[in-house]
Image (cartoon, rainbow, N blue to C red; front, side, top):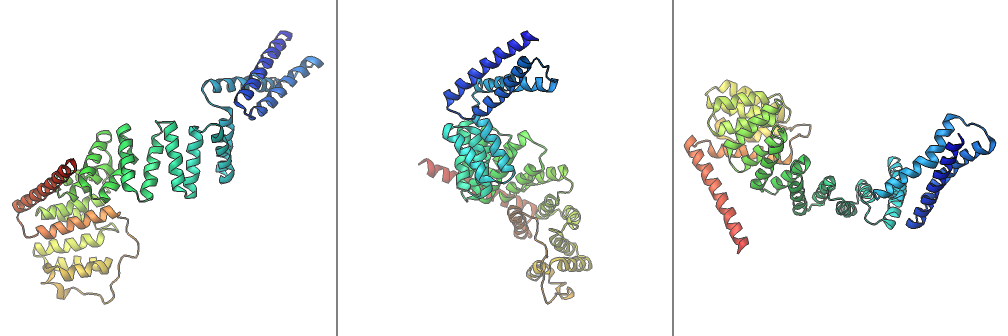
Length: 406
């Protein structure tokens, strides 16, 4: 017992001296807390020695934790270049953040950065606070410094790109995302955001490359297959678009957007029965039901079934008269039956906002326009038209690349 107490006293005193040296070395007052804990542990041991009283196991554990274990942990942290002030200030900052007291959290982190300007955790947490407060530019600055401190922080790469995109700087955002994907090509969120940016900028070929690269790492991704289908659609490469939409529908049987696109592609290629089948699968969805019934009405007229066409047209009007009535009035195919279709005086649209994204709506409209363009063409004419359009786009891109090189 006496030997154990003697060894404890020697080790505890030695650790006390080491802690004091580190406080002087780093000029860090955080070590005062450690001194207090060590003092409590040593005091418990002296109390046991001086009064000859055997303290309970709880206090024995306490004295070893305070006087031995905690100082040893601090020494190990120092060997790993983790300063004590980081532990204290980051812990306090996280607590303040949890209670939404951001000012106190920022003060703790700024104090830490005053001593350690390159501290990764401080920059990362400070960036998150600025982002929560809406200070996007400040958040970007902090995320960039976090990346400088930790090159493997891919989440911060993505955050910078996301914030740049929100600041309407898509070129800078896409540059950051390309850089991120070159380091971590399987990062799905980066692919999704980069693809959206490229599609909005009408850089469809670049979007195709991005989605194809992503599918190497996640071939069963519904989002990537569907998005690749939309990119091919905008390039008028309907054969490849069809393959992607079919894959997306296979992965997600409730992918009604894919099925609607497949129906429109089938119409373009004069595959009326297939188009009808896909439109029938879409009529129960709120976003696409009115359009699907409208297309089914046109198919019925193509097949010579006027009564069914009128029925489908009336259903479409009931669902969204504001959208469907102008289409019916404009399309010559309805001339033989328009007198039998009751047109409401007050046109109403869908009460609820649709769930289709801007890119999905644009792709849908493009498919519908392409069907109108190709309605009176043969299958061979359509293939030739697609070839000519793709060749024209290819030649234009080559001219642009040539001009850049010159």
